[in-house]
Length: 264
Ligand SMILES: *[C@@H]1O[C@H](CO)[C@@H](O)[C@H](O)[C@H]1NC(C)=O
Ligand SMILES: *[C@@H]1O[C@H](CO)[C@@H](O)[C@H](O)[C@H]1NC(C)=O
Ligand SMILES: *[C@@H]1O[C@H](CO)[C@@H](O)[C@H](O)[C@H]1NC(C)=O
Ligand SMILES: *[C@@H]1O[C@H](CO)[C@@H](O)[C@H](O)[C@H]1NC(C)=O
Ligand SMILES: *[C@@H]1O[C@H](CO)[C@@H](O)[C@H](O)[C@H]1NC(C)=O
Ligand SMILES: *[C@@H]1O[C@H](CO)[C@@H](O)[C@H](O)[C@H]1NC(C)=O
Ligand SMILES: *[C@@H]1O[C@H](CO)[C@@H](O)[C@H](O)[C@H]1NC(C)=O
Image (cartoon, helix red, strand yellow):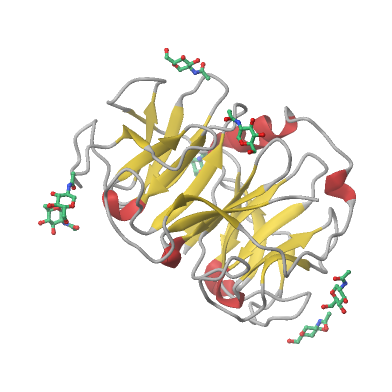
């Protein structure tokens, strides 16, 4: 139930360092825009270097290298810019507990030194792979979290041992819906440098943008309540990340692909 975590503020730190444009402060209406498949092949599941199996996460570093959390292949795939063939940088394809293995990884983050942090659902641990290393060390603390509270249909910031919650988006009583102020099973959240919030509104088949401080959202990817595999559609997508140009990368999980939505 707890997903969309931000490891120790690492993601926020790297987002702050990004090139700031004015684009993030405009309200777009690109709900009909087409996504570009940047990894995987729509609807095909596999473990070849150009295929994925149930990808849960996709993130890019400052060189636009893409890292995909290829969950059911128990690996992290790295794609150089414009390449549709990935190389495995973490995990050996087995689902074990050794330091070079991953078991159902669900999320990964790369820092400015090229080190990868991987959250593994199967082993309940967060693994740190130093750049180039195929084996990881288990790291402990997670610090501040932003939680996409899937079953309560809302987004709240949360820190360890803090008991008060502030609603950022969604219905305060947890009621699901598909209008501009409600969500249905949100699974991930990310922020741009202006503090605008992007929410994976999974069961509504869309990505919602909430301008900083606002609780009324706009659909910027996907089409409300239409699951599918066309370029404009999403199917059980799980995560969202921004690159330095504020393009969106969506792990379009059930389509076994990563979709990129250009920000214009
Ligand atoms: C934006 O979305 C609204 C509501 O769906 C729609 O009425 C309007 O035509 C859209 N505007 C553009 C420029 O696409
Ligand atoms: C990637 O493709 C874009 C668009 O075709 C091109 O402008 C860019 O130079 C390419 N980058 C690399 C590193 O190949
Ligand atoms: C990849 O998939 C094939 C066919 O399902 C399987 O035989 C093979 O063991 C898999 N390889 C890895 C590394 O999981
Ligand atoms: C782990 O991998 C082994 C060998 O590929 C497989 O038999 C087993 O079902 C897997 N376990 C889980 C929980 O997926
Ligand atoms: C990671 O290591 C490789 C190989 O040593 C190096 O080329 C690359 O620049 C490193 N990445 C970062 C972000 O430092
Ligand atoms: C949370 O509070 C408990 C009880 O007061 C304390 O033992 C624990 O160390 C605290 N955890 C953190 C991360 O501060
Ligand atoms: C969305 O629906 C809820 C009831 O489910 C309602 O309270 C709210 O006002 C609606 N928001 C908009 C923008 O229509």
